[in-house]
Length: 128
Image 1 (cartoon, rainbow, N blue to C red):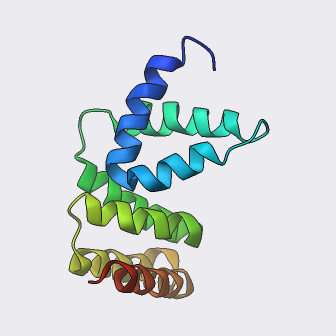
Image 2 (image 1 turned 135 degrees about the vertical axis):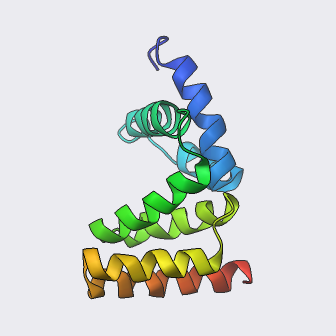
């Protein structure tokens, strides 16, 4: 890793673990190989330190935005991870429902329906 990137990486790693949990983040980083490790480092430094750790929005708000954006992009794998992160950041099941209803209007019903399905699976997994 570039030594100039290390402080951002460390800051991002802390935030990433706060949102997504140690187990998920450790698994993502430890399972990276020579090909994918630079992407893990980049995402941790730039998405998690340079974006998530910025002042101006609370983590809860960032999580709510992520759920809407990931629905719009129809990215169920990332959506699943960020539902768990949103719950960790204090977003309620009811708020997630309202976010997804809102996305049905702006992102399309099929995308919202996919996200509802994934969210229900996550709620069942975490016992809510």
